[in-house]
Amino acid sequence: MVQSPSKPDSQGFFGAYGGQYVPEALKQRLDEVSQAYTLAEADPAFAQEFNELCIHYSGRPSPIFHCKNLSEEFGADIWLKREDLNHLGAHKINNTLGQCLLAKRMGKKRVIAETGAGQHGVATAATAALMGLSCTICMGEVDIERQRLNVTRMEMLGAKIQVATKGQRTLKEAVDEALAQWITDDEMFYVLGSAVGPHPYPYIVKRFQSVIGTEARSQILSETGRLPDACLACVGGGSNAIGLFSGFLDDVQVRLIGVEPGGRGDGYGQHAASLCLGEPGVMHGFNSYMIKNPQGEAGEVYSISAGLDYPSVGPEHAQLKDTGRAEYVRVTDKEALDAFFLLSRKEGIIPALESSHALAHALKMAKEMPGSLLLVNLSGRGDKDVAQVQQLFATKAN
Ligand SMILES: Cc1ncc(COP(=O)(O)O)c(C=O)c1O
Image 1 (cartoon, rainbow, N blue to C red):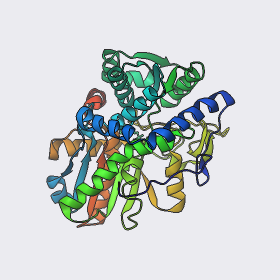
Image 2: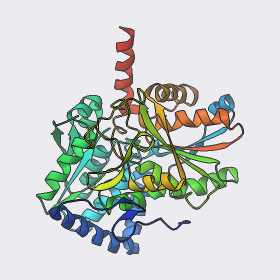
Image 3: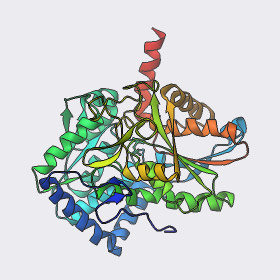
Image 4: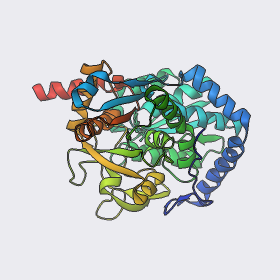
C-alpha cells in the first residue's frame, strides 16, 4: 500500500466528526468489534485471507477502462474504475468479505445488515452463505418495492428479510432495525454497509474499500503514465468514495470530488445531499453533516437511487469537506438518468443509478476542463435498476 491511511483519534473522531454517541449496551458491542479489528489488522494471515478472497471470489483487481467514445465527445479523458465487474456487481463485496471474516474470527454465528439498494444486502447474504453464517437483512418497505430483483437474490442466497415499516421506510429505518436487533443478540455481528455509523465502522469500512483506491492509483499510472486531474465517486454513506479517495489523499494535486444525490432540487425532502445542503449533527451514533427536519432530527430525504437516500454521511467526508481536501457537489435525478443512458449507449455499459451520479458530474467537468484526465468510480452495474428505469419511462409515456 502506498499511502498511510488517515486514522480517527482514539475516541473515533475525524476532527470534529465521528465518535460513538450510543447507549452503553451498544458501546460494549462496538468496543468488542474495535478490539477484534485492531488485532486482525495487525495479523498478516487476516490480510492474506482477505486478499485471496478478493482475487478468487470477487475477481479483483477490477480493471480501469478508458471511455474512448465519451472522451472524444466531451473533450477530456474519462476513465472508469470498474467496480461493477466485481462478483455480484458492486463495490459492496469488498467490505462484506472483510467484515464477515472478522465476524468468523470473533466466533459469531449470525450476521445482520441493513440495505438500501440491496447491493450491500446481496453481498452480505452471499458472503454469509460462503462462510456458513446465518444472515438477516433489514430493508425498508419502499426500497423493497424499488429493488425487487435484489430482494429475490438475497432470498435465494438464504437470507431472511426483515422489513422496516416505520418512518420513511428506507435506509435510515433499516439501520434503526438492524441496530435494535444487534443489541439483543451477542452471537450476532453487524455488517455495516457504508463508511458511516459509530466508531469503529467508518474506519473499518474505509480500510476494506481502500482496495479500490490502491488499485486505481497504480493502474492509472501504468496505463497513462500520470495521476488523474480528478477522482470522482458518488456519495451515499460514502464507502466507495472514501475507498477511491484513500488511494489519492496524499497526492494533493489530484482533486477529490464526491457527488451527492441532488434528487428533484434543493427543497427540503427533495434530495439527500447531506454534505452540500446539510449541517453538522448526530444520528445513528455518530456526528457528521446531516439533513435535519425543523425539529433538528434526521430529516426526509429523496433520491432516484435507493443506495443514496441516507440523511447523513461518513464522518471522514465531513472532515475532508471542512479541510477542503475534497469537494462535494450534487447532481439531479435527471442528470444522473442522462448519464445512465449515455454510458449505456456510447460505451455499452449499463451503470448503477448511484454511479451514474458520479459520471454525470464528470461529463460536466470534461466540458469545463478540456484535455484533463478524469477517473470515475463505477461503483456498480445497473441490472438492479433496469426495471425501475423502464417503469419510469412507461409512466412518463402514459
Ligand atoms: C452501486 C452502488 N453505488 C454506491 C452506493 C452508495 O453507497 P456508498 O456511498 O457507501 O458507496 C450504493 C449503495 O447501495 C450502491 O449500491
